[in-house]
Length: 361
Ligand code: SF4
Image 1 (cartoon, rainbow, N blue to C red):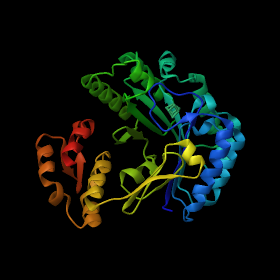
Image 2: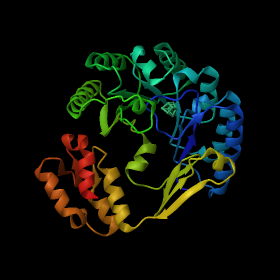
Image 3: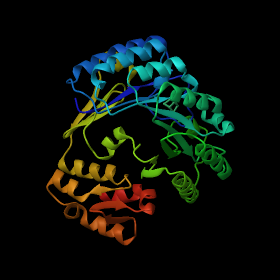
Image 4: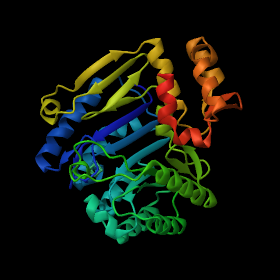
């Protein structure tokens, strides 16, 4: 096993209208069976002490107290030296007892699914919490001892106006939190919003909102360190940095994936198969070209970009030798730049990363 582990808990109490993650509706018996298999999968990995653990979903907090305790115990052995241990939680499915179970299990960081503080916008998303649930959860978490709290926010939501986003930012200003992931809603195929023919906001508006959010968060001392992620100084997500630095990690659970040296593996997304113990869907060998491209794809998401030395040491070739023409083109149109011995996407480049990466590909 590598030093970073992602654990997927696919159960949710309700399905959000925009969601295309790997998830199923909560059923207690399924969860018990799932935890049996998760344990089995974990056992198959080579033992190792972990640097980061991230339990995501789905909704890990949809588990009952007993189930959550079991999950914590399962991972306890690996977590003695953990630097960051995150669990994603939804406000309506949390309570004080669950918070204590997580804290006693060694969890150091909570990632709370908020999306917006404008309650009338939550209904069309099929999110069932109230602001009070979020505030109570944060207060209790602090009382118990959590010192690292992140929230997930979204813009480009159905019926959301500029005023709504400004109100969200005002509320964020009053919170004692350390990290924010602020995503633009991406309309995915076959989601309820897609079926309802929701029209996403146009690119111009999206750019305008993203700049507005960036500026407001900057004024609150949140430093943007990745396309959609902002942190107070020293609170960048260590686990997610492992992905963006293109380091190795393992994943267990439904639909989870991992990268170990030059191999990338992906688990089945079928709960039936997973519960039968057929965990793996594919395991592919990455060519040097794949790895170079993925290093660029992940690294350019970071505000500090890709270290030129790091690239050279990893591939024994300079990034200019491999991608010189593309880099030059995007330096000329001011989407990329060299700074601090790194290749960096400019502020405009970060917003147009998708187009840049198509050229690298
Ligand atoms: S809670 Fe998260 S994983 Fe579950 S349906 Fe909503 S967005 Fe998807």
